[in-house]
Image (cartoon, rainbow over all chains, first blue to last red; front, top):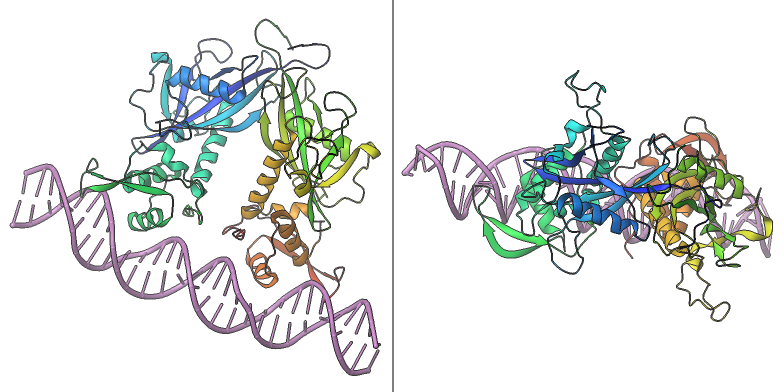
Length: 251
Length: 251
DNA sequence: CTGTTTATCGTCAGGAAGACGACTATGATC
DNA sequence: GATCATAGTCGTCTTCCTGACGATAAACAG
């Protein structure tokens, strides 16, 4: 690949990942502790440089696998995988004090994982509750009771990713990406409740999701892992767009 | 800005613009003719390199002004301006044969302009109907009756931009960005019809848009520029999100 | 056996949208 | 000036969807 540095200004290009999951009824994001300057010791979104001959989405999938061991969902195979989509690109000239870095952020929606650190650096990667991370921080390390902001502009990237997830589960079947391959209507409802931070009526929710063609496919099995009456098990159906959408309750 | 080429692979970063407007009842996009290799003589989306100390959105606004003379809407002032938002980023390693280029695409929605070439190169920039551009081309220059594809991956970028515009006018008041500062309900309806490529019922449309709080503000004036009974003039209201949304008719 | 929990079915009222009739106010045409 | 074509605006009716909520079902804990 010919490269003439005088012809155009050189940039570094990175990918950053907003990896979301639902754990214990709360929306959580994957964060890693920075080992080096700048922002040494601060939490940040996982990410890294794009390689010279690597597509952006490949770089995002590679970083995801390196940090979590997660594989991206293979459309066609029914494999257990995460949903990955491009979020936005952040290129403020001063977002990295060392050099001009343009970062392409990707959004990952994953089911709750057995171990958050499979394949990664155990003590420096963890799931953090999104609503804790996104409280406005005061910047003092341990000074107040509010969290230290993430490194770089990662607070904003995280907020954009969360907002994307919140709005996208309204009109798509993407909420199933937070669920294991087989799940109950109640489990799916608890995903919506965690992502939106609201309570939903179980009866109306049940009517809505089972009445939308292509959203859910019954597998025939039942489970009782939540206690109470056994619930039917479903897989995600082929539909990707919900029409009419799920309605997020007003504040 | 320190730059150590051994520390990270160097990329060129560009912005590409999907500039859409509605002209003569048709959705049109701005295209420029390439004067140099590669893809010499082919039509392409306007765009260019991001400068070293320039924010991505500033680069997009600069390119827009250079090509069309259009200014970006200033939120707060009631100025006549275009809507600009980031669309997506395209970084396939082989999308430009010369070097590794990552392009951040922006979507611009503009009212119909008096002259498409104000401030630009007159013979090499024009409005082209989107549905003509997006017919699948056969790649032969003048061989078939189908259009020659745009340069690079610009066909895909254009398609993504058009799809974004089509879906975004459903749940936002963004269709007003295609209208002059004062417009009638009929003119707004013709925007929806052109962007979606469907016919809408004038009576139901009128009820919907005038009944949505904050969408339209009457200015008091009337006009008869479309013939027929004079119509009330409106400005865009403060609302940005439409709830419930405009419903795009099924195919 | 009884209470608790979760799942699932049913009913009813209110709101929004599609289909479409009717009336109004212009300019164009005879 | 009467008539016609064109757009704009107001109403009505039916249908569908949702929110609120009662009622029943099937498990487990004591």
